[in-house]
Length: 443
Image (cartoon, rainbow, N blue to C red; front, side, top):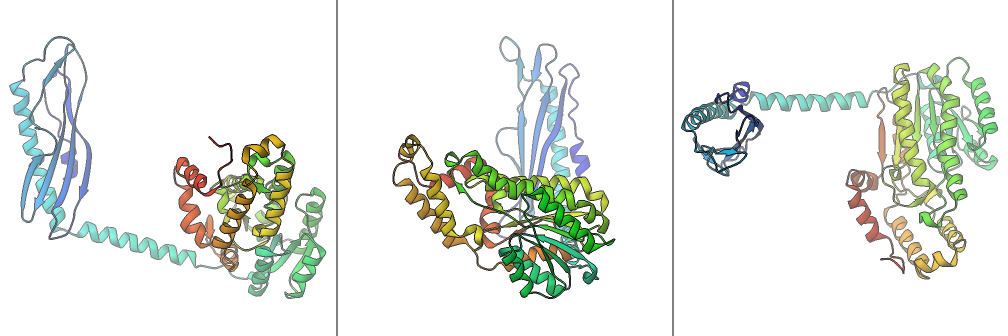
């Protein structure tokens, strides 16, 4: 029925080169006794200018169903009105033959639209089929999402940044689940604290992801531990957030110190350990951030997390044929060392003190205090203390038969940052402008 409605050209004289065709069809069926049901059809006449004349018009026909009666009315203008236009001179007289042809086809469209509406109103098969398809899709998704791998006691997982925070808690969880955990800690104290809180199957090594030598030592140690089984999981959790602040306050060294950990260190770890992961057909789990979706502050942190997102996407598409999954964890704001107020304020004072007098004058003497006050308000308001919301995502990425591509952890990630990332850039600009303090010499 719909195809016959679409194929209804007006057979006008060839000299005018006119064709009538359906431009857009939209159906809105409101199953309410108190409101009418609408079936909208938009007709557009496409004309090609050949010779001296061209017929141009645009009609919109509205079909309104009121209870058991169907009436038809034109929404904008008289659909039977056709005008001739010439390239020069006065308008040509209205052609009677063309008007009659259009009236005939308009009546045909009306009859077929009425029949189609009655069919849709009296036959709910399409609605039931669509509802059943959606329900089946949801059930299949939940079933696949909850499938877990077996024989976890034979699988090795290497985790970086295990001294505290997400990495420390993840190692404890994986150790309880029976994984053979290989934890890369930055300090001896961090390694000792982790070993004292876990079982004998968890092993630690000292790892500095900014050092190629340290990464190579960790790689050789890992090869001995995993043997021929390969490495089931690599979790790139090590990260650095400071310094953060206005971009103008930064020097190149401030950017590099963060990028070496969050970006180049993560990439080097992944590329060196990837052959072991391919052997086990395992997965790479990279910890990004919601600030890898929305650039909310200056410094190297947002830049590095955007890099984690793009590198992970590229890697996933490059090695998907080898049975390796690449997952991205996007935590919101959580109470860890990354969001600790004392080091943040200390770094902001350091950045302010290294500015030239001209730059300080442009911001004003009170700007730093206002900026710190806003940072305190944000951290105290939206920071979540439940780190398990993030580690549960990491655990699922390692245990699931079909891991997700992205995991957003935290209420602020789901309700604030992720929706904000889909907004136009001007909306994000205005929102941040309203939150941050205004410099003294702003225009």
